[in-house]
Image (cartoon, rainbow, N blue to C red; front, side):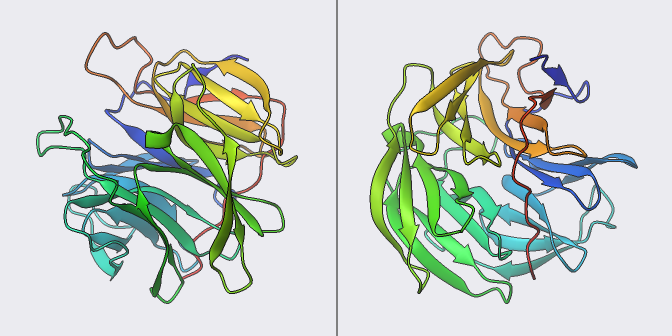
Length: 292
């Protein structure tokens, strides 16, 4: 596989990639840089926000969601880049000192958002994580919030089975991915281990391909791990970045894999912090816009 950066830009902590098939556009966030970024047929745009932002997801009605520590907001995509117009949709996690982290929409267009203790200082430096105060929340199109899980460390990875009756959700502090059954009433039940610790980094964000395989970015591991539907390791894909953070399938045929990455303070290489792309020859599952 030939991994190439999509531009010359490097980000402090690029995360949350989303491929919008309708507009053939890639969305992502730079959490530490407080940027909501978009690259499409009409070029590149970025919006400067006042707080760390973990995800940038287009909505069915034409605007987009950004997930901030103070809540989930709608962003007018026609707004000026230096002073974006925000309208708060909801507060998913009201726990003081927490921030949003992983965020993806399920096939029904409902936003699932994982939170964690804030680990980013005002100057962008790291803060220690001292508690398991994170949770997993579902935000419905009307803005109503349902808490699904609590007492989590660092929520990363949200991918669903084709039928939607299982969700794989990771906790980076546990170095593990878990699979939950989604009950008919929407509760998460019957948690089982999907994939445990591996010597090549810890689990960050993931994408799922059309055969149900999970492509997991390994923070600090210079690689992706591809897990079979039963959780067995299928392959290891080397990357030219030290801290990949997440990935998503995109491109006209959904065979391009986009990988976001971070630029560590120590001994960063030339590609650390880049958004990478390669044609992996495997068809991925499409992203779903927020239904509200």
